[in-house]
Length: 252
Image 1: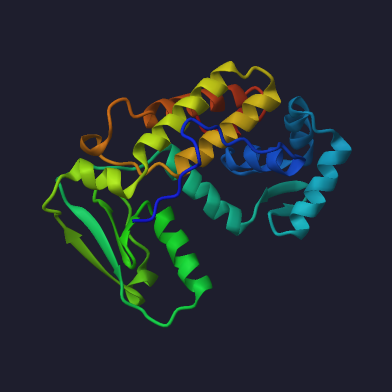
Image 2: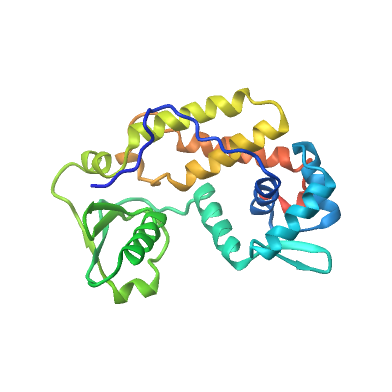
């Protein structure tokens, strides 16, 4: 069972705040994800990004394929629109009552190179599946989302009911205690942060953390699971951003 965890529980994963990261954070949280340059100039100012720095960053982001520009309006590219959908799903996951079934995906294709295997592993992880053993992925069947059709050519899909303890299996597949400890540390950090740049940096980390939440049924979670608290904190922060970003662009 492969599980990626940080070296010490309770760590906060903060990344430097660049002009690019400020623009992406604002647009990824905006609906629709586009803004005229005049709105962007106003929006990034509280985060210490000046107009000339912003314009240079926008030019680089268009060249890199991060953004599209049309008549002075900048919007997310298709690649980043897909990222926004994943982010939205992580903040507002669509679930159903769990009846004890598990999704199981068994990889049947052979002859794939390391890059293809790594790409497939990343895709399955993004679908909130976990690897029981090489080529065998599963999760509780509590998500309202189909598996991509193109998986049919490389994998078989099953519905399964493990004979053992569901909570023990979940704890073996995902580093739940570690995830919870890191999330509680992150919640404490954003509660202390008061400068706009510090809060944006902290809540960007909240979004990254939510993308790794397995979104398990309550029956399989350890006590005091902080997933709901993280989502509530982020929703409140989106309300704060309404003072910076035009209000019809922010989903709360």
